Length: 113
Length: 112
Image 1: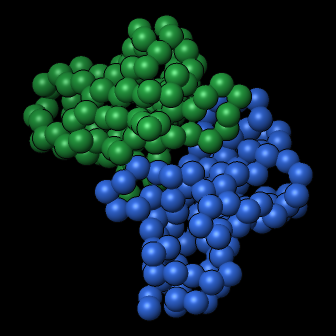
Image 2 (image 1 turned 90 degrees about the horizontal axis):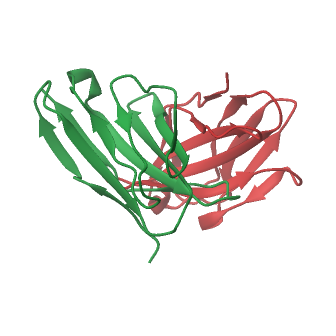
């Protein structure tokens, strides 16, 4: 069975500082990895995905994520955080043969001015 | 505008009273799915559908039913709701060959 772990319930960062939201996964076969963001009272929005190729993936709103196969990780990063980045972030995994997407428990990002 | 709509957005009901949450999409997507979101558990998949008349169970299907009679609609049915089904529900879709999903705005259900 596939699984995703987001070890931090909350990440606090000051505006302008770099941010990292951690994600590790377990899946049989080659993974498809995703990050979604949820703003208050809204549905999830797609940020970025990794399928194959370059380990550094760039996405929306200046976010990027680094795929590390040996550590089975897919951490979300941004060089300079904005207050408007404050939201709930979800990592998700799907194996390349399946149709089910498995989500982590979510990490709340708080960016303080 | 590409949209996934859900109705109702908020619902308070009592144990055992059958209810349906509707999901509709205007993107002609083949794949549709239902999730429930609970604090600390992330989103868990309830049911999904690869196309009309094709549905399959997700991780937490107990207590739920779905149907896919038309491509654009994928209703979630709770025949006899119980308090442990109090949750935030999301419908999602994706096109054939695509990987990322588009999510609806959510339905907050409270069962007393």
